[in-house]
Image (cartoon, rainbow, N blue to C red):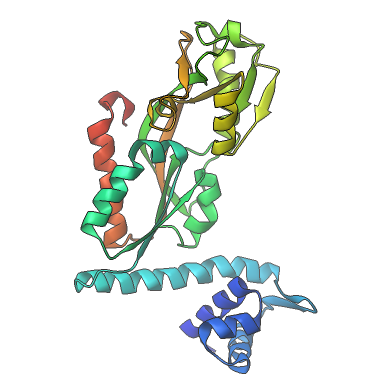
Length: 306
């Protein structure tokens, strides 16, 4: 028996809706037809994809493994349809990207403005976070690409990673902080430090900076992974944090954050673009990435680019 594209569509919808009834409503099918489609897929694969429980459906280990591939196929087909629409000059479709906070502060407003001028009828979806957080959506094709700090761990073979630029770190605090004029890390050891913690590199950056200066790491730390939370703490309390310099220069932090004039060498953040290997971008997604690359070339000094 051959697997039909409708089987994949029905399986993906059932996973995402959590029940046959909800999936049938979404697909405008009767429940009997949808059940037969799922059973056909299971017979073809010779495995059970769902546990049938009193409270509903739950993916088996086979179902979990198969879902990401099935979702990727359906997303690729959707991209193919969007390619045809753009070639016919019809526009429409969607571009979905992941962008870290640093990249958002630097380029996102200008990139969105330029993109909408070129593709006014294309929907744009933007999610935030680290590249590690974006993995699942990049893998199954829900995101066209992600821009963020280089992951600490090596990638598996499903992804490609292209360096874009690096951002130097500075020690950040509020204006009027008692330690705002310090010039040595040694004077900041006993302060209260905020650590981003969204990635392993966020956790390592302060430690490595102190180690490079032959100093012990600060003992008083607060792990805070949510940007609005650590900004609130920085702006209202006597805390310090190592962040890319753009946080101080941006409109968000310009009047609320300052850089402590530390002379010790600090770490930097490498920003990369991650894509799923073998996934050809739609014309709209490719154009948006080109916009980011042009903005990087025009706004950042050559020393920060690969």
